[in-house]
Image 1 (spheres, rainbow, N blue to C red):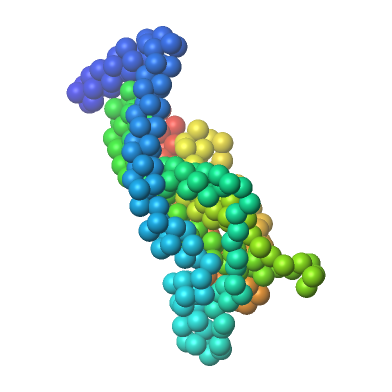
Image 2 (cartoon, helix red, strand yellow; image 1 turned 30 degrees about the vertical axis):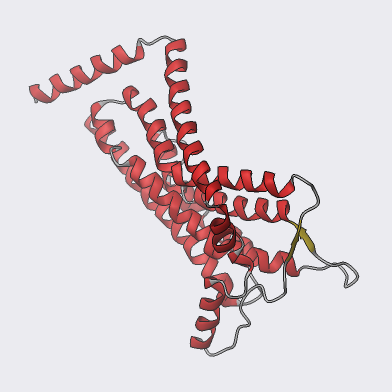
Length: 284
């Protein structure tokens, strides 16, 4: 018991020393973490720009093709359940460019986005390195795998957005017409903005359990609150899935199930944090 008290006192003293840094010192430390993160993003962005031909033809433009993996899997699944699906993006999607520097700027922007996605674990490591000195020893121990968890969830979300949300959204939006007199000719900037926004949004959305963890930690939200509005959340998720997918149950189910699982995991995390907090209060 005395040993544990001594460790806590030592950890508190260490934290107090760290907290004695002036505001300008904290800004200087944060600036260097930003510089290191930006440098890593620039390195990966440069590599992405060098291999832009492969990235565009094999990754970025792939979701609009009827031969894309998601479309083929949807057709196979429809056969399993006893009906025929035409797949996704069967109507041709024409991409055009209006500006002289348009394709160059889009290529640069895409390289930066790719650099950020690949460098995300390192960016999170720099963020963790900045806030780590302000934590107690036991808090550092419990959050030791935070970078790996956040990076893993981000990449899962990116894949979810790329393989599920993006092809379904492209299929619905490119096929939406107000009149037969209007022909869809999509600007390349509009296309890349939509795809990258969906992919990044997917990565950010999958950070929901981490956000719920910290909000539950400080008592902003509780598992009771999440359970109370569970049905409302399900309705919102179903509406989102219905908007971005073709009008069939299978497509909506494929998109909705991961979102619901993510919400349920968040409830479980919030309940665990709330239980631990109550236990500490009882011990005090």
